[in-house]
Length: 243
Image (cartoon, rainbow, N blue to C red; front, side, top):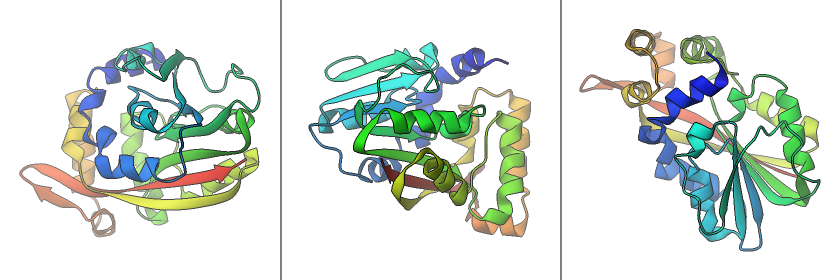
């Protein structure tokens, strides 16, 4: 399945995913740095524009960038919000344009030329501008193989650890990198799978891989089975780097 078809399928139920609009995660992401009324911001991999809409009241202008027109059609174009269908790896902006660049749960989808994508984020930032990057990681480094094995059934993607994300930013030139850990509690695996666009057979397999995981796996995720659902605590990192 090519990328266009992949996102076309996912776009139909994307906003039904509880994590997408989770208030605690959204608040942690937005409050991670000093957005202000003079800022011009680019949101990379904006999807349905959740970050764009959260930032719009706080900044001068915010642009959402995404490779999927189907995802963008679920966004809302008005006021100081704009959306563009392009790839961040394309050179479409001048140097030193943006005060902030954001990317929430996007870089694990950038399988090819990942460093190039980060280099572009750095290039288009103004001197002193900031990048806010967030990614989900395994709850413990020793569970990276289990984490990758589960996600391999769902999609092609990268699995990061904290040092991978820090190094990705450092190689592009970012400095003064801070790392914030956010735990999304009681994440519903059932909700995640039902709105994934996956065939039921794959949904069932991934669900089974969670509930039959090792004791270490279950403990690290603080897993609980409630009313037929599997609830876990998901670990997300929010990194802020300065140009």
